[in-house]
Length: 125
Image (cartoon, rainbow, N blue to C red; front, side, top):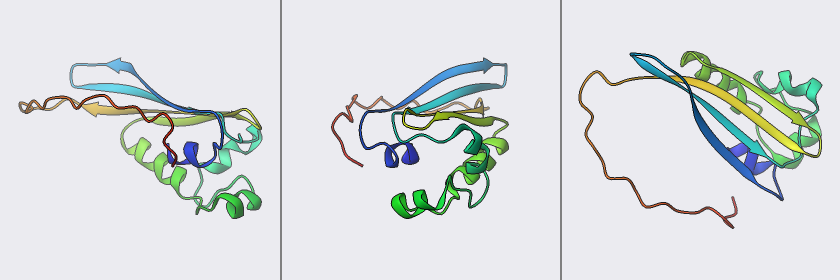
């Protein structure tokens, strides 16, 4: 979400979550983060998931960053028995997908009242 917000000056950033698979002991969720930002050349997408990987040096200078965020995200997703991938096109934005597995609790879960819905419309990062 942070990268989507950072690289999207106009338009929108959307997070969607869908159940991908359910089993007796776990549920696997599919997260989709889409934006209308600057986009990534399709042939450079593999690079951004590697440590210190950047699309190019000018992006690093303009938007800052170490090139570690997506590499760390990849490792976390892998540890949670999931996968991560992206689709993008320069000038039209990007769509990042990841799946992760959540084990069901083995002991009772304390119920908490849901918080009131709030809108992030118009909020700047």
